[in-house]
Length: 317
Figure 1: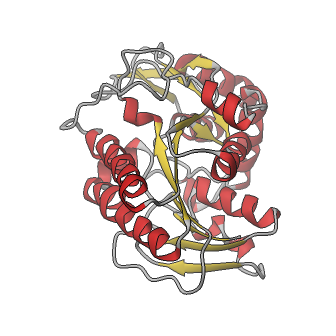
Figure 2: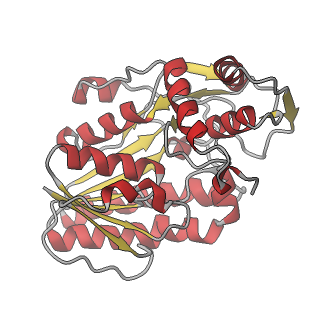
């Protein structure tokens, strides 16, 4: 196959590009480096089946040649990013998704949308099955991301029903691993960077809020299987093992051996209190479930961030 991956220089996009290449496919990567980084794809640029286009998918986009798949992963995806880039976040979820769907329609390609567990908002159902419609504040600060992804799901289903485009929707739960951006506002990267630099480890709220942490290799395997084997309905891909944020901080302290203290700050507005995927669909349809234990995954992620020690990427924003 030959596939287009938007957001290809991002955390997930770069790993997904590797997965397609490893199975013998060709990848056209597209990114404008707003939140992605050239370092994430530097090792791919010489690959005979990889090409890269620097471009904003929210603007008119032309891709030459046949395509078998269009995988739309472009978007700011951490709270610090979409709070700083609210208009760009809304545009890439709406205009960007529309453009990517248009490419898939023109090329008669399968379309794959990277959606998010944030479509569930601050959930009133726990764990969250795909049938749950969510509890989202559309005008809150997080609404720019939540509603952009909810719109993206709606237009994807419209193209599926009206134009007959073969579509997939993945709802991604908290994912972590190498190539996360330092200081991107996500809890795993924040804790690890703070621990390695000897800074206080900052927990927002009392740390009792829960998250489910899926290592990137597991996440990408689930995404890849969904692209190949799935159906048009949304599918949760995430780790159903639930941890409190405070437990994660303690794991990072244990794994790094840091002397950093854990400090507490006020919880941001509309921050979800719980997050845990029901992965029954993924288990049944794809034969997928995560394998990497959080301690092992955190250890591997710490090793990656140690390689960035002293680089400008570790500096405070």
